[in-house]
Image (tube, rainbow, N blue to C red; front, side, top):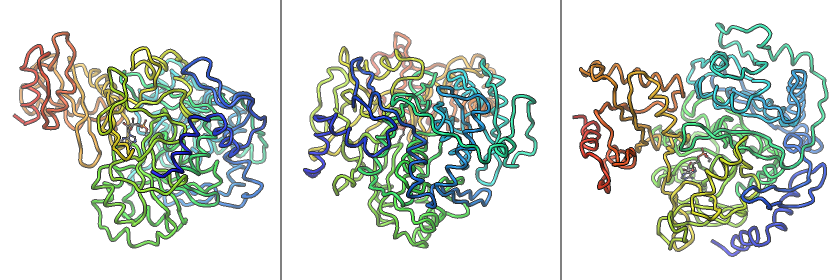
Length: 633
Ligand code: PRX
């Protein structure tokens, strides 16, 4: 990497305050900050202390002066056939209507609003409206089942929930409101009100009088209501986004306001090399961190048009994304390796059918980018492809190509270099010493974490410290829970997680969550879930379960029936994204003498690898059973 990047990165660490103070000029401050960083209670970092700002103001209002008639939000649904562009002026009007409705329901500064919505424009209005009035959103991915939703309701205790009757996927309606009803039956703290965007897709939807409200009716009462932004202190929480870890209970990643706005504005320039007035297309979903940072806030803060797409990459045909690039002159695209692997199986003619001259480059993230896929898309598009690595916790890229700082070569399989602001180290898991080039270490960051990263775990400061900062003995260092290496040229490579988190089609899942769902089936005594390599999805969960009563699996037919039931249990408790590829029934799980399930050995066997050191094994028959099950014996 060139000297320009090196100087840029060095300055971000060594002259931190000056560096970030400059980046902070990329956003509007209602009241200037007095201190760039307050770090008197490590590892808690407060950025731009004393400054007052607002995410919605930076994403919408401040562009009205120069860009009122410019496209801000391009909504495309290949499911319903809708296609509609909102200018910044129109977005401003819609956000104010939604904000007025929320205020009329009593939502104010610091209150939580839970958003459980498909990819429709109103989902973006809802997020922006929430932060506009200083409230805090918790967006839950639509693929999560009712009980996952209930856990998140209980944790954040929202005043209002916003949903739609249904979404659509692959031509079929997927109910949303129905799941909200069920989640509120399961939750201990029912939301006061449920606001429904009725798309007319679920004719069977029923309403609970006094609780459920029709958004269209309320919106009509607030067509011209002005809702001024509520200025909040920089560290005021903007949102909570839950993510999986090693325990069964997801963590609420809490994001601030000022640091996040600055981090995103800076990343649009230095990472994505994206300019105001252009179109940005992130193919993610608003339920994930990529959706928060790069469908909603990043592009809008940067004065761009953002594409909100409801549909699959294959309908009406595999050219749909490239048609969108052509029609809306997309300059920067952000997607995930799984999606590219899906496209790779289609006729390559779809990539040549459209004019892609507007496209500058494509960024991919969320899971390891294998070399074959990287090479295929780079050649097929004939555009630079940048792999970049980050996490829900960080909110923006940690390791990345940085074409906006300096043009540089990429290496297949590598997310390139540390982003500015991150003091990245590869550490030996036990000694915490830095490893040599090409040696495997844990990807770690010396705190303070830069602006944009999580402030804490919602309502659980202690858990934040315990989870992320206690991996290296008595040293306070942030662990990413990923293994990595760095070559002689300084390029990083990610080798997979150090914990029990798996990555299915770019979606992060805790194996413990899936195990808990499976254990909820009354036939199951014990279960271990591991991630196994999958050609298309990167990884898939695979379960090894012990039944309480062997009679339940006495014949292959009974066993197959129980496997189906267990899968249905996961669907209903967690959502289909957690459904294991297979549930193998075995008589006992391989455990150490101290009773710890040997997940890594099970995973190795399930992937046809050597299970490694088995000397701590209590009884070797467990391992043999896993092997026999995988081999289909
Ligand atoms: O294991 C790493 C993997 O995904 C995890 C973070 O997932 P999530 O919180 O859903 O955030 C995704 C934000 C893009 C990481 O700990 N991961 C993410 N990006 C990459 C990756 N693994 C390899 N290469 C990547 N580029």
